[in-house]
Image (cartoon, rainbow, N blue to C red; front, side, top):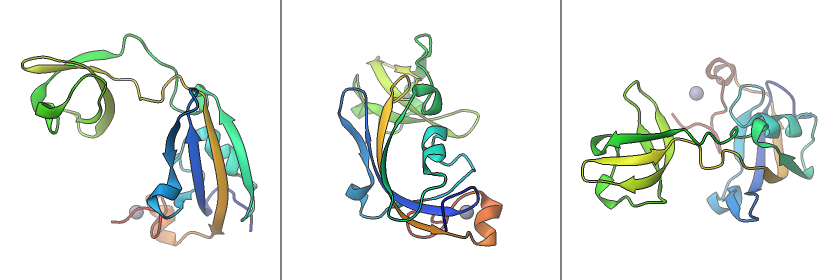
Length: 162
Ligand SMILES: [Zn+2]
């Protein structure tokens, strides 16, 4: 069975940024990531690279910003009251943190400057504008459970727990 849309694939990966630094590594977490392919659960460039692969395949793929976290928008800065941050007292410039949005949901931001009552943040994803290199090892491909298709993501080991 090969990896394709609507299959649950499991894989280990290492992501390296343009500066050669490792950004994320699934082996540090102990188990491979499980993803329902074709539902936008991972960046488009990686999804395409996994399609058609078989269990045991190891490959490296370079993903341009447009197929990863988008380009950097230098205007995407905002001054946000401290109450919207978790652990605002400890934040300092350069920290990456999660901001709870008024309209619901969350967003990863980078702290630019901490003021008395507000914090200036860069709203770009920390990996925006970066070409990323993924080292991938496909460890599993299976058919999804009906409920996984309904939810649009994988459950169980390496997937959503809820
Ligand atoms: Zn679910």
